[in-house]
Image 1: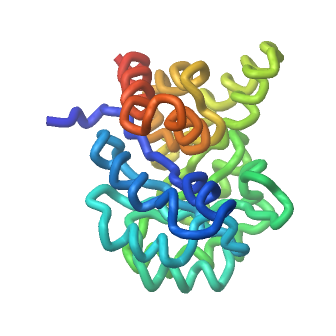
Image 2 (image 1 turned 135 degrees about the horizontal axis):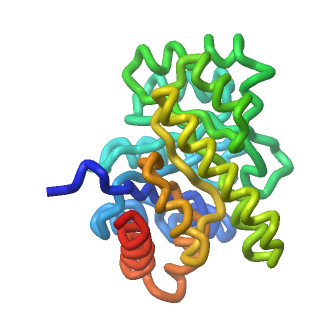
Length: 249
């Protein structure tokens, strides 16, 4: 039986689609990657349908909804088009993220505090449809408070600054960013929010975050897809799962 305290692992398959789209055609197939990740013991699949469809496609989302037996976390920008798609599919979870056409990846958290009214009205129909709404934010008290006020059930704290500082050898910055993640995980939990963390996590950086008792889920994508090139998806996921469990215990 799975422990209720078990830290969940969500695997983001976006960059399998990036490789597919670089050549055109059907391979590698992100649905196959999702199936392998599911069989390897991940707790959910994350896929970001971007406005420009640079990696995940509408057909991928349809396929994932049809074949997954673990929850789908549907990442999307706060646009009318994406809201309509989410309302049609009703995925288990919807994660609202900032999105800029020119960015290579999601570069920071959503600015909730400046857009509370718009975002509160935007997420209400998604919650009514039965999806759990997550807001992807920086580890900043203003943003955590705003996410709580607008009615989000979940926050996902952006761990990119912490991971970048570690890999660049800026250890004072790393420790400061890790402290912010630790404090905002506890603060969000105290407000009644479910706390997730994601972006940039690797085998080197995952354990300090996985040790936070308030964090319920980590979402990891690019690094695992990269490691899968060398190890295969199942061993790459198994190694991450082991490090997470080791840190939690």
